[in-house]
Length: 194
Image (cartoon, rainbow, N blue to C red; front, side):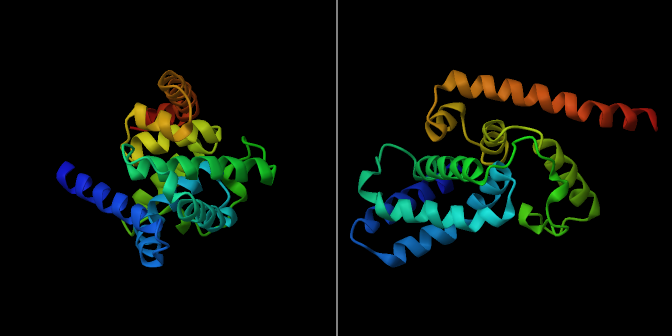
């Protein structure tokens, strides 16, 4: 699988290089390759489905405009997710939504969470986890998303978030601690029902 990922990283780096020559097909390929991953990431960070496509478009515009500044020693996904994190965080600030606002005000159609047709149990688990993640700050949600859903290492997350690796570790510690508190009542009640 690493060979496949390395191959994709090389293809992505090649596409970014083609953007320097104003290759619109390269942009389209990057857009299609990253859309689903960016959609899920931005959805979890912003918690505002009406902002997601706008942020993705902003991210891809910056990728297009700043392709010449891409450092080929950096993984393309790290660079792109770094842009996405900054744009998502800016969108949250600009929207003025309190970070602690609950998940309840979102549309009944939660398909934007990237759920697959994996059965009712999986949907309930996604809703349950989504509600818990909604209690975290955008920075803590980003660390959880990048670690568990994107499989990135703390050093890569630090590059994306523009902070020291120890800050990422601290954010992960606090995110896990808060999730444990949020999820503890649910865990306790389910263990007593058996």
